[in-house]
Image (tube, rainbow over all chains, first blue to last red; front, top):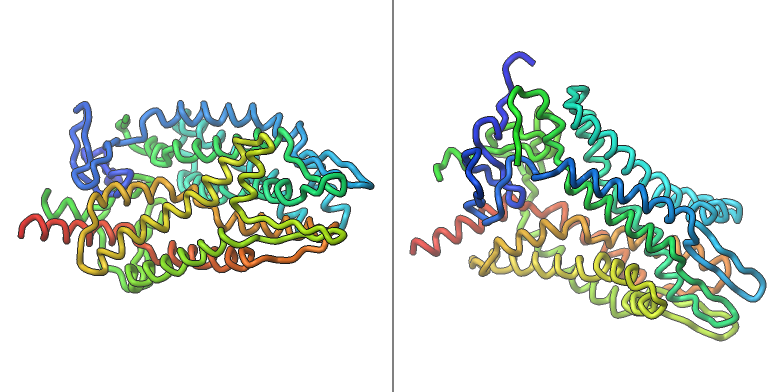
Length: 212
Length: 210
């Protein structure tokens, strides 16, 4: 880069995280509020890296029971099955619903892993103040932000099936304990995505450091 | 605050400071450094958003009042609405899942629809709704949590899973959810938070000064 890029925080300007209004704020002053919407002003999301790490580590831990435990129990007169997330996908594939198998695989296996690994990569790169390809890393963050919600798919499927198929001995579907763990993973990774501040990816290009 | 400060934009993804320019309808401005979309100029933003939202609100009622689908096994019929599904999970001691589904599929979209109507209907009529910053903020916070389109896909996946074993009769809410997904996407695409803030502020300042 030839000329230094004009950074809002470097000029004491702060963009409100709620209404995007740019207003002047002196660094070091204790608390400032947005003149338009009253939200607290921060140059950067406070404690972004620490909070994001905490949520990601919790998600990694919960990801284990989410995959090891039973997601859905299906019982009827003839058959009785206990499915984890992965065995459910395999069963769908084997019974010929390969389209649905692919959709469920993407939503329940690929997206949560993509989210966890991407956020880990972003956090490590931000902590090392890496200047490697910030544009691509920002795009990765936007991708994580956009696709994250789709992992709720399995939660909805289990809810609908468990509520509808309650026909006594004829057929029953029950939600398993993995549903709770998996739901928690989805919610925690969504919070982690919200806590992450993509501006931190760009800060190492500047000489000065910005906080709060 | 001076006029000059109001025209500045700091990119929400990389904090690059830049000046806004007038956009042609249907265009958007993106950050030259990181490529983030900074703001858009949707055609007839307020009118269209309001129209889509009011339509979505009506379809939303249909989607929640009617059963999504029913299954039939040897004359036994079982049908559920979305809220009954939530209640059923609550009774099956899956309270956290039940709550999560209720918040993301029913509560968040409902509050979003109410907030948009509360903000845009008075604006359209030339009035300023009281405590609009609160509602704008609520919209922004709720935005990631309304998951009607994911629920729609979930309904379709369940439908395919059920047809393997049962005779499935699609209900009224199934179609309602399909339409609702489209209407919400259209409303989100035409909603322009930056523009609504600017309009509400201008009206509010007029009211205070007069």
